[in-house]
Length: 75
Image (cartoon, rainbow, N blue to C red; front, side, top):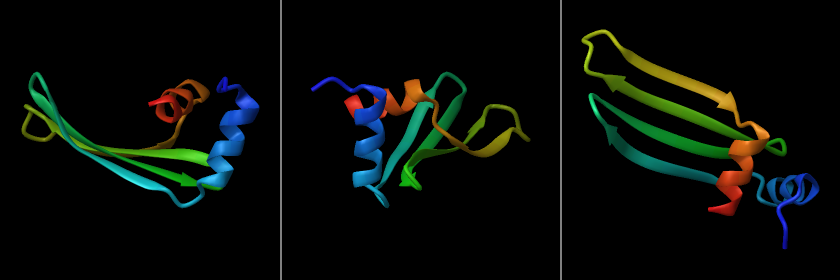
């Protein structure tokens, strides 16, 4: 099955309420935890982390782009 836009939308609607946490990805001088949630037929991503700077904590939540949703569903 190809993950066309219509198929991706159908999968998101069928999996309403799904949540996934990916703990602590460490990169050079930073770490990040991501949460994925399907709500309202959209993939919502929350990224929370910090970098090596003392005051550089972040907590961002946003709706995934078509490309990000495609990659998430494929994986």
